[in-house]
Length: 331
Image 1 (cartoon, rainbow, N blue to C red):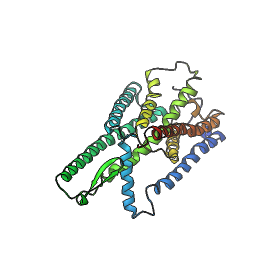
Image 2 (image 1 turned 30 degrees about the horizontal axis):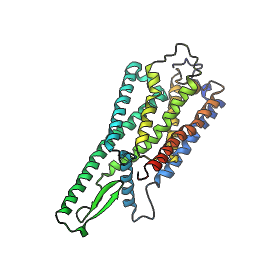
Image 3 (image 1 turned 180 degrees about the vertical axis):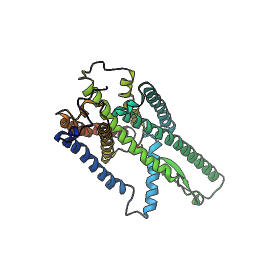
Image 4 (image 1 turned 120 degrees about the vertical axis):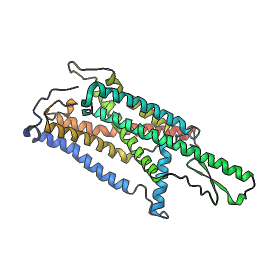
């Protein structure tokens, strides 16, 4: 959708006007506010001042994030199932984005759609690695439990052994076996970043696909517009794969992480402004063109769309949790 520029975007009068001032407020204000809230919430998220120690609490938080990153939402589902789905999704998304790059070249990355598609692909790269590593740890922990139980049957004193459950994994505590799943801190940090990517991609995918199918596509009047296989796939496959993963995973979905989604969109728009200030060429989306008198209205509407797009995905996650609570109370 390469639109011919309606004005010289490198000229000063294109930027020094009331339209750009309003658009800059709609973009920069939410982005700055989001960064402030991210700093505020994330700084104290993993620390409980009433705990025995800040460092111990941090380690337990990393372990929790790692556990949520690869464990399915239902205990009876083997983690290998989630890992298999993520690898399958990764292969599909990677094949599409590589093929799209071969056909359309680097110009494809001028579009927010391809930014979001790439973000979703990175999410599944992380997810595949964490799931495979989590399955390895899961099987190792279960094998350790079986070995300890065999030792009990051979005559070890039961007073030295107790059984506990940690995040659904049966752990045997003894003098030599402390019942702590040995997980490197970097794995927990990757799990934490993985959850952020999940929520960021969720909002971006909903925004991309909903704007295209409900705003751009029905009212598209461009001549010689290329509506092809990649157009359909890049505006649907990422949503299907992400919703499938959301139905299986046990990741949390706190509302405050909408700020990452806002920052993601803000960075994209600022990137477009910088590129067009240096070179006058087509806008990837017609509502980004600042020469239109309706530009501030479009920018404001797209900014407001972030709330329902993120909210719909959050509602779906809550609905899944409610169904699990009713049908699988032990999960």
